[in-house]
Image (cartoon, rainbow, N blue to C red; front, top):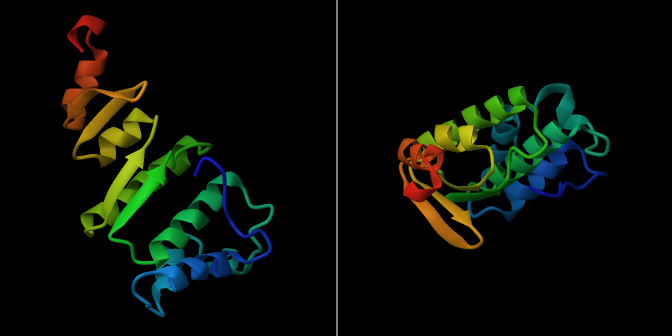
Length: 149
């Protein structure tokens, strides 16, 4: 996610179809389902990816990954470059995926997003884990004076 990786000459739907074709389960409805979930259906589906805003391109990337029916979704800073409204929408979609049984491994600097999504949080600094546990506990630990960490 830190660098957008879409096929600029393909349409939004074609980008998502690439993910469906690479998936572990070939489901003809996977592309349409992923497009709907991320609000990419309608006129956007036939729009070339080139020139779309960052938030829309991130949704294209997520839809492409999801169309492959993964058991685990690995996300590296999915909220980077998104505005508050887009982050809230992302949190809702990721929460729904987790509730449906998709495991999420998220590397993220947005602590509010992490707190909303995670069952367990691990905070790392310089390659070392400095706090682990439920989000509320970890966030409280991080808010405490440094000597408590």
